[in-house]
Image (cartoon, rainbow, N blue to C red; front, side, top):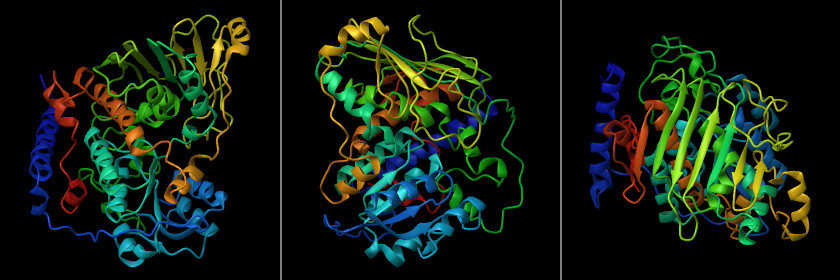
Amino acid sequence: MKTNHSKNLVAAHMRRRSFLKRVLVAGAAAQFAPQLIFAQTGKATPNERVNLACIGVGNRANDDILAFDKTGLVSFVAFCDVDMGAPHTLATLKKFPEVPRFQNAEKMFDKLGKEIDAVLVAVPDFSHFPNAMLALMHGKPVYCEKPMGHTFQEVELMMAAEKKYSLACQMGNQGHSEANYFQFKAWTEAGIIKNVTRITAFMNGKRRWHGMKVNDFLAKQEIPATLDWDRWLATAPQHDYNQGYINGDWRSWFEFGNGALGDWGAHIFDTAHEFLQLGLPTEVNAVKLDGHSPLIFPQASTLSFKFAARGDKPPLELTWYDGQQNLPPLPDEFGESVVDPNIPPPSKGSLDTKVLAPGKVIYGEGLTFKGGSHASTLKIIPEAKAKDMASKLPAVPKSPSNHYVNFLRAVKGQEKCRSSFAVAGPLCQTMALGVLAQRLNAKLEFNSVKKQITNDKLANALLVGPPPRKGWEQFYQV
């Protein structure tokens, strides 16, 4: 029997599906008069700095802003945030006092659009989509934090927009431009990693929702004077303000976040997904969920993703483990965790690398590999096998550019984005399917050609997500 919450989900998501059918068919977009001026951007020349506008200023955006600044290749022309008075926002603004400030991204483009070469989108997961689409519709290349979008359909539209506008787009999984990327590419091309049938991926650190118990959304609180709550909500359904939703706590809620999987999957199995050509799964199963809730993420999850054979590559199963006590089965010879020293610390919770750092085990033909997250490279296990293989391993080139430089050079036409929306999109859609399995505590059968869930009507409706709030419909036009 469906709960009231489930029935409401069915109704809401069927409304959005009906909306998208009206909008996405050929010519139907005319029913919404475009509110944007589609500008042609002037690509920065090789000797110029890229004029970068930043949507999102504090928290993770601050890290991105500092990383872009460190390249020496950008000039910041605008900072935009829905809360320009928050302590974390003010801390960033203090470092760049001369940069023009906005609380509304559309007004930022109206005033400074001609001066902007590219846009950083570093806001909560659920608002990546409208802000990235806004930038693309204005003809601006986009660096968007991961995951690209909050729903399967949002990611689909973002990939379509990248293709339509032929703009440089980069998802912010920064390890995709470092040693792990180039090693995985070289080892697959040389046949060192081949015929992989099984991957174990895991993130067992403490998360914000661990220990939380909720029966409903949070009680209404007074909105801070400096916060534009309506723009914070963006395309999400209407909710009363509560401080338990902001400053990263949105990660706990299905309505706003993508859980440990969406947060860490793009750093852990991104290279395996790309270079093993996994594409979209045929089945996603919630094998084990501890503390299942329709509102917040489980206390622990074991998810199975099954991928069909791809050409001469065999079928593959990827199993995901999160939760502090939900440790994955590991080979006897696993040894110590592989840790990337450049992994940023979590703003809440802990990353206890002394127990088991985030990582993966890859089971290929004749060889087993262990790896960590972000840029950390793979190691062959056991150690005796690694020594035996040492002379047979191909040379791995050094990265010519980190993730931020790669994007900026792509804006200038000098390189291609390594984690373009075309590359990162199917990875994000795979994770979105995993989040649906968590949300519904279900096994989902997926037709990867038609891009439909075939055994669960509610889950299939949730691929699209809730209907857009009034005033946000324009972002669903491509």
